[in-house]
Length: 447
Ligand code: NDP
Image 1 (tube, rainbow, N blue to C red):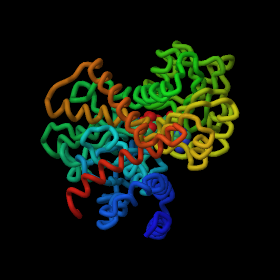
Image 2: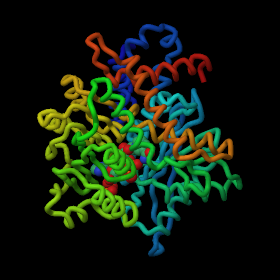
Image 3: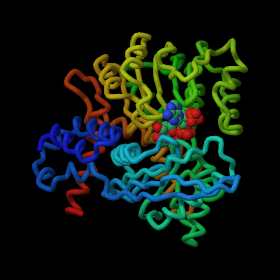
């Protein structure tokens, strides 16, 4: 079966899973050459085994809201591949969650985790439960009901969940608490925990900081200085906020942010005071980005229900909200406005059409699985600290994060450099991630 037939076959078998097919198609297209070079891979049907998850656990989550009503949501864990280490990947709570989205995320996670150089397989989980508008007690009850179903399937050497969209320190804390109660063990089964009970310093910051470190590595290949550059960011959650924080520290200008209701564009760039205000609004009060816009009509423009890309003049774009949030038209608008680099904080935020535009324009373009791998890397460091029962300093963790991002960049450059010197980061990340997992799968036989 050639690559095209393979994708067609997947499409037939999983007809309602467009995000999953999209992610597989991108990876398979870029590793086809390497795969074909080694007939041994084909002889054990490695591609199909690598693309179809090891196992999917799905369950009903019943919980009681503050009015005493019984509510039901779906819960899932996709354990994609554990050839190089225990399953590892975040939990997403968002109304849009379905199996296609979690399968794409678990698939991507497998390659990303392989790139980090740490021993972690790939997984993802979540629920169509939305924490938005829910009280703390409702969220706690939901998290407990969710883990009540999942706890038998996870463990420090089996599967280690973390946060993702809608799941931050609060939700991880509630899930960890219930897991501890059910198992009567205090282990490092979740990452992203609070600092008082096994969390790692720099874990909240890691995805955003890591993305900026990756960007610096990319810019260095062209001798470009980040200082003074205008950077458009989408989202205003964990990843977006720590990306903005690091950019401001390094002297770049943050010219946009967003949430699912709309975007703000700040032509002169966020000041540190404005950033602090947004940080407090989003993290302490769980407020909306429109509230900031209402308070600062002179400094920024609010675009209701719109993404920032067509409204912003930026040198660099760092999409950090969700999948498929930057399409071909957005990419063309960014390029027309002089964008020279895109580094993805979110998972698969650019559509295939947008990626084609960036690569055809020969700008620096880093896919999420490379650029946002800092989060799971520090999760891996949290697991290491938990098993040693030690805590490393913030400086130590940050230095390791910096080193890992440089290493990921090097792997991308090694496998992604084209004849004209252009680094195809998509090809580089997919090939490097694939080879490590493939070698481990070959060695372990058909399991
Ligand atoms: P958060 O929940 O903290 O923030 C998500 C942000 O994106 C919010 O501003 C949210 O707006 C916005 N958003 C969510 N869904 C949509 C949507 N459908 N359309 C427009 N905006 C949306 O999540 P994170 O910051 O943790 O995650 C952001 C991205 O980064 C995701 O793709 C995630 O998979 C990826 N990622 C996260 C890692 C981590 O360590 N947290 C690690 C690696 C990748 P609103 O508040 O209105 O919902």
